[in-house]
Structures are given as structure tokens and as C-alpha cells.
Length: 56
Image (cartoon, rainbow, N blue to C red; front, top):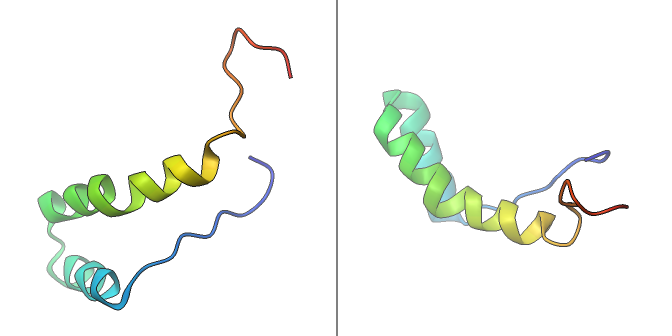
């Protein structure tokens, strides 16, 4: 990727993220990444990624 990626967090997700950072809860952090950020990342990058066997 050659440009910034913007992900949006709801107020509830922001609160969860702040709690994770304060508690340094590694398990909760991984769960948050999988449940909240990964779907957004997948949706945002869909169509931009080129498989190694495809030519741009």
C-alpha cells in the first residue's frame, strides 16, 4: 500500500481499545484485532491486493 489507511471505531470500540491499552491485556488485544479491525482491513483492502500469480 502506498497511502494511509483509515479505520473507524465506534465509541464502544474506542472504549474497549483504551481499556486494552490501560490493562495491557494481550488476549483481549488479539481478540479486538480479530473481531474489530480485521474485518475493516479486509473490506478496505479488498480489490487493491494483487495475488502473486496475477499481473498488475
